[in-house]
Length: 339
Image 1 (tube, rainbow, N blue to C red):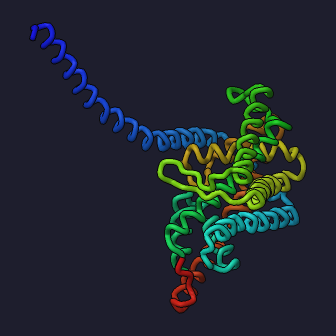
Image 2 (cartoon, rainbow, N blue to C red):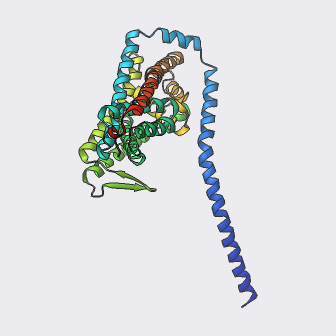
């Protein structure tokens, strides 16, 4: 064997060894980046929000809040209650598919309590941990709860995609400054979102394969009729949320503009992982409505929305959670679902 050939093989082994070393390093770096990036982004958003908050005339915001009529606030709270019932109904889809045996009433109460905790403390606390706790207290297995959660999330985002698609195609929002995008691009994004929602309906109606698998997770497809119910319920939930804010603005801002701002704020909150979208919701509405209404009035409306849709339901959910725990402890084991 020639010396040149030996050196070549040695170099190849060295390169392979370096590659084997760099592989785990690259994976570890990517893992840590995924863990740190959301928190870094959240810290940046909170810093920007804090900077903006210092420039707000908070006494004027309080004055704007005091000017809201009790009738308007009561109507907003009423719409919020209807919206919670609709959202809680998402879990009925999972109940239908899994046949877990829990009553309709207990399913709705469980979903509503979890949603209130989800909005105020984040998805891990409310959307997952609280749902798992409540359902398993009634004897529903963890695997079944996971399917219910997956179907609820699918219903929610299915509604988000088609409603966002319609808003972007029909009334693309006018984004300020560095956020600005052309109407053509926004309509294209809207069309793509609507198409994805439609694709789900097509798969549920005509696909021979009734289970979708991704990274070890499986999602059972409902039939076409149930998928349409999902789309309508998911869309109604988002539109009712927009109606709450629109009512609080007393018609001074067009409904599509309000709904578009709310939809953007929802995604921004998910990206930043800030619990309850604290500060993110306010920042998006202030940016979108800049030049339309004074900042103090916009913030007053968003704070009233938070009270009606976040805080009031949480006040009701806390004793409801205590009641459900007490009832579950007293319930005979034979009366609980074992599925």
